[in-house]
Length: 434
Image (tube, rainbow, N blue to C red; front, side, top):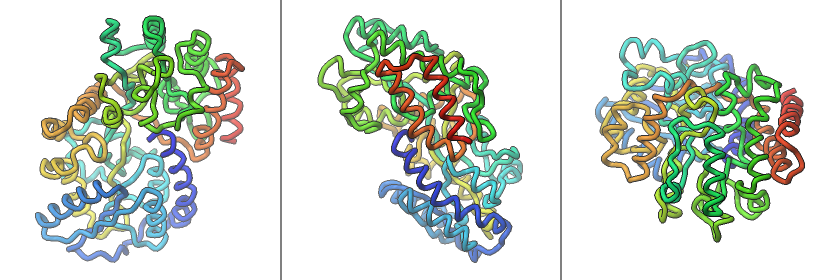
């Protein structure tokens, strides 16, 4: 969900937005043309997900005496098809939805509110935490989409190395804790640190949440007070000046966000090695598949208040379309996917960690070692987190892909200190957001 996915999302949003916005009035259309014995379900995914989802669809169809038309696409194609379907008033009954697109589809009246189905018991959320559910609510407070899986911000770290040094990460660690560990690891081993350099604004946003500040609010920056931004950029300044952060030059030699090249698991010497990587929880399995010579473990991203900063992030959602003629059956499908143990046995963690705590417990014995690490971490995060921020405005794509990276480069090449970087970030971001 980092890096290249953000760029793909920005392109896809631009392509889909024009079509979606043009059909706002069609949300009240009754005409999906479906008969009562058929349900159309659409999602994006790779071959493994498609095969698993087809099995779940077949199971649900057999139990309910219906047929399911499963429609799957690659990520970019999916949004183009969905926009075309919306324009033609022929949307599927159940659609996979993404965090970055959710508000567009809500604002254009294309999604069915689910609150009445929850209160009636048709959609059972008793084992789903409120912070997870809140990620599917619109600005009006209504529930329009239910996460089908979640991740959590996670520092993936080399536990073998830290254990050898007698270092234990505190439960709710601060930026000072993080930097002190970075200093100690570097002093004793020469191994450096990676603090999400040249990534998007997720980590900055995480730190602002500790101070009850949103990065983006009403299409603008949530605050222009440089104090909050400087706190974040100071980590890079200290890492550059004291030598414990990986140097900027190294990042010109590797492909950003390519896990197989991440210095946590891929390095040729200690000065090119990191003891940590700021990612999301489910990615630990991919890191371990690259290099399992060291034990990997997860900790929340550090901040001044981890509970305020922390959140669970939907990997994707299920939503029922306003135009569906089979809304009860569509909701029943979402409930089945969320709560049925047989469906869970098929999907496992394909869309992230399941949102139901009961389902997590059910599948846990079937998970691989690091899938279980991610699942346990997600359960712990739910109890130590706050509701996720609303999606960033569309214009923020440039801040993610260009502005924050340019500012961090200036710091890591010694051309700016944290205060200058904070001022430059605020200035450039305000210009981008207009």
